[in-house]
Length: 248
Image (cartoon, rainbow, N blue to C red; front, side, top):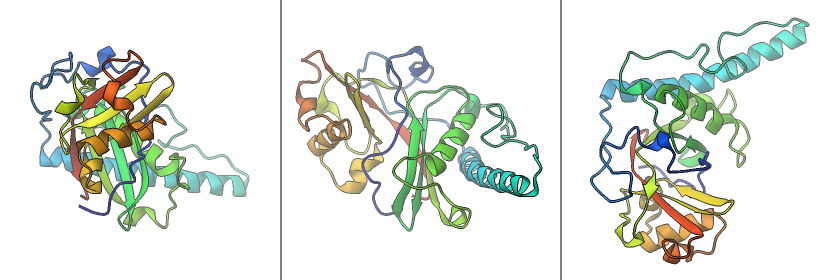
């Protein structure tokens, strides 16, 4: 595994983590938050490779369209594009064969450069087919992560990539049940929220309590806010699992 993620992974957090969109994949964990088994997504090696290729294509396609648009403006012409971020969602995006890649699942896309985080953005719950979510998140991670400048055409081919496909997001009934390397966490209090993926504490060498504290810090909360998350009625603690693959 390459050099650590920066712990503050950017994310699109749903307004209601217990929304119906989280129950579509609840075949390995029940929606009450009770730990009923690990999330396992039936993705073949070919499907893994397809999603990784798609994420890379989404970035290169955006760069190509940006170059074409710049050329058209300099020529005083206005050229149409097939795909890219400015067209209807999904236009120009390759479509996989029927199967799991069409399921509605949340996903994160992470890019690194020379082992250092270069961009990471994701959606906690599915909002359309998985393959379209991966394409959107790849573009967002490359060009819209506010912590970094947009990826350039010169550096894009050398970027390392991994994808995290998320299982159901459910309320954690007891922080003592959190397992480092298995669970990702989301903590929320009012307008404050923060998410850390399951691989982050492993890469940083954190124990369970440090993982919980760092998730609270990510949300802008006191690091011990998790200790009363199931009692104070204000702080909400959620957990999830993920299938992670790519240039690990």
